Image (cartoon, rainbow, N blue to C red; front, side, top):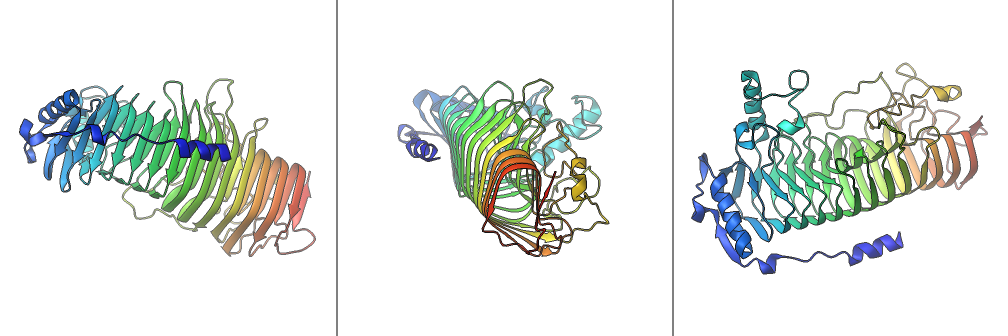
Length: 504
């Protein structure tokens, strides 16, 4: 971890602002404010002119409608305070096949979007127009009649691919019809102090980083209908590497900070510091490798999660159809304080997380799960306090400790904390793993739960130093099944001779 810290200290972005001295106001190229004019050509002309000189394109105060525009190398798009760049609500402006992003860049360098203005995709209006065109037969889509229009048919707000030296700072981005920001195969990306309001429609991920390296995401405030900050490895081969996330506030109707679900390549040297996650439907922290890729060297410290469906979810699965298996190893998660209510934590938001498709279950614990023969390795959890609403009832569901093998493996299932249905612990569940360390872990439950607090099943090399459990109702508070090399010390349990129970 010390080497990783040094690498991040050495990782500095070179500002291109000093080279961008000449300004190009979009009004000088014919752009007009108001909702009646679409200014795509004018804005693109300004960008093209700035690209030749190496300058900045100014969007002045006011509302300016545009269709898709393309960023060019050595261009700064500057949104003045009070400026609002509005996406066209005519779906045909984005093309007849896959929808073009509102702002895109391919194979460009030294590009930035700065200022205190707003990029508003008007996603709800775009989708309404899209549905009208689908009903009329003007456009086609394979999924809209059974679910919703496909993601490829809904324009993203910002989509950069194969670009280098990118900066986004201070802007507000909102109301996308799909992913808000998508950075694919990019290098040296700095996202700082932006606001994301992305609850307009489904698949509204706040920030997506795909197969990109040397990325900093800092001081951002994100309210997302889907994952807040999500790292993916999919499409062309590649990995996410040297990613730094710090001092961000995240609200999500999916997960807060997430690696996966797309995990064909991998994730390495990921560092997270001091994030707040609130009113979030799924997990505050989700690390998921299910498509044959890997997760290696993740260091997360300082997470304050209030009202979230789950605190920590680490999942190694096998969703891909090949014989390539995923791996997860060398994870550190520290200084976490989480509150898990026994009600839906994102209730009342515009797009709530879906109700689980599994059988009824009690409030679910944090979990670390691999699959038989493929173990999650070397996970250190330290200085963590999780408080659960509790109130688990055998009438809802029950997996007795002599029936632990009945827990659903669900190897190929979509990874989320509810994927197993009922779990036999209220605080933490660990299965198919090795090298698991709990250091200074406190698990609280507001209303007593009939289940054990912690279950280890098929886990070797367990080191517990400082485990504190509150209001344990079950006489067996820590269950060890098929475990080896177990060290437990400095525990504070509701002591009785069977508080720690070993079963074959």
